[in-house]
Image (cartoon, rainbow, N blue to C red; front, top):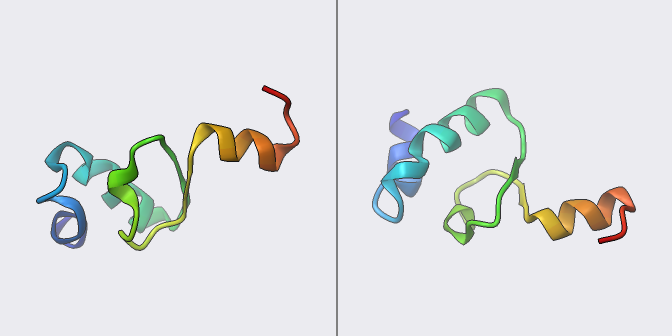
Length: 57
């Protein structure tokens, strides 16, 4: 939690828990929230994820 709080807490305190989970489990996030940019986890917007999965919108 402390690492996540340092990385995103000032930008968006509501995202600290989600970032902490992503860091702990070393998984990417699916979010349209640009606050996660530069936080040390891979993240995809919904559109990017659908494109990578080959799903048409």
